[in-house]
Image 1: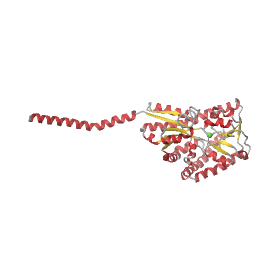
Image 2 (image 1 turned 30 degrees about the vertical axis):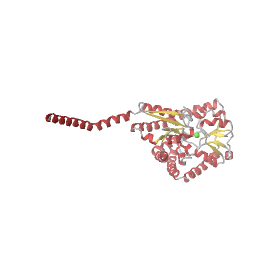
Image 3 (image 1 turned 120 degrees about the vertical axis):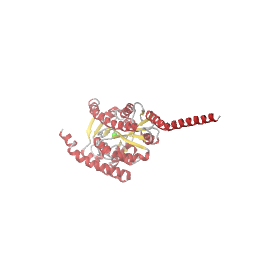
Image 4 (image 1 turned 120 degrees about the horizontal axis):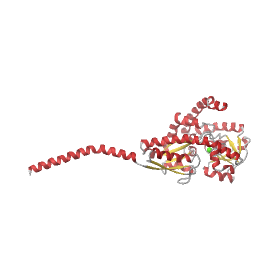
Length: 368
Ligand code: CA
């Protein structure tokens, strides 16, 4: 009995030893397998947008982003894109992503001026930066950091995600021959440009793209800006207004934004986070390339096929709008500390880049 007990004790001891060594291996093995599981985990995200589904440029960029992310992640991150109104209305993208209804959104920051005035600096500023200059400020001039600080209280991470280049001044049902013609003008023009129009005596309204044609055709508005020939042709705006004015003083290089719900982004493994930020950079460049390649053909079609009257805004109108823009932008900044901080960075950068571009881009384009 004693021998048997001794053997039992030895056997128990051995079992304990084996169990202990298994437990010792356990955590390491478990870490390895859960690490592997984390990287193999599939994420299914929703992206809401402010554009009609697959709308040229604005709406195709989110689709390209989705495809790129799917390929780069080998299917581990799937992003389903929703057009305006499919999941949430066009101008509720910010709230939807902030609240986590969707993990991502594609829109324009200036639509959110009611949330935070400084957001307007991250789409376009009247008489401000061109697309090329904007990218310099965002990626290498401190702009992105300021933008991410600005959106942090809303649970959002913003990323640059497309640029239209210089837009057109818009479609008008009355001629603009002098500053007086802006008085009483009811025009769809969002963001800071709208504030400038108000200062010039007009009535700015903000409407999503999908409502422009009807509003213009029914006379609910006298004029609308949208983007440029490529997009304006797609909306058929030439059927609703007589005159097409340039240049887009109010939006010299409008940047689109990709917003990411912060907890959702932070739940991704590092490599998927890098895929999201890299794919955003890719569509940021690609959208500008698409507009650059397509705008001229669209303008030719508007003029030659549809007989559109293309006009430059008179020089004195542009001069007046520039003066008002400087005042309005400085005043918007002065009313809000966050906007002042962004404004200071933006203006310092703009002054520097304008100085250099006078002897580079501008000099070259004049000489070409
Ligand atoms: Ca516009």
